[in-house]
Length: 101
Image 1 (tube, rainbow, N blue to C red):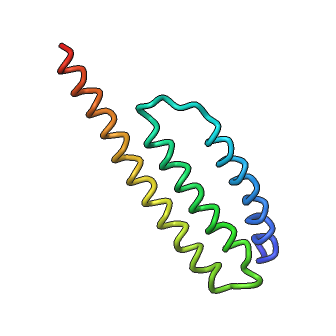
Image 2 (tube, one colour; image 1 turned 120 degrees about the horizontal axis):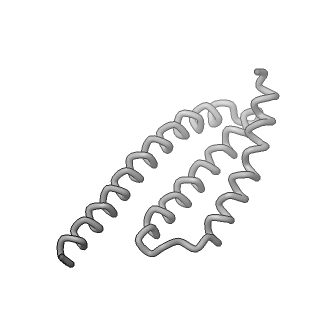
């Protein structure tokens, strides 16, 4: 894949991320999942900024490389945060069920 093809594909992702984030803001979410939902929006927004930087590789190649490395770190952080939040939700449900018995 040439850098021009990669740049084009990255540029195509930007509006899709923007649309996805906008849709997530409008999505009704159960209260118990509100924290996860907010986290997802925050991380997608961070990834969007990094994608925009990566798509600008012609103007700032070093910035695009750093954004690519940061993108991977953001993904890992999101996964870790999501696991922690989901674990917390299930612990709360488990605790609530014990207390209501």
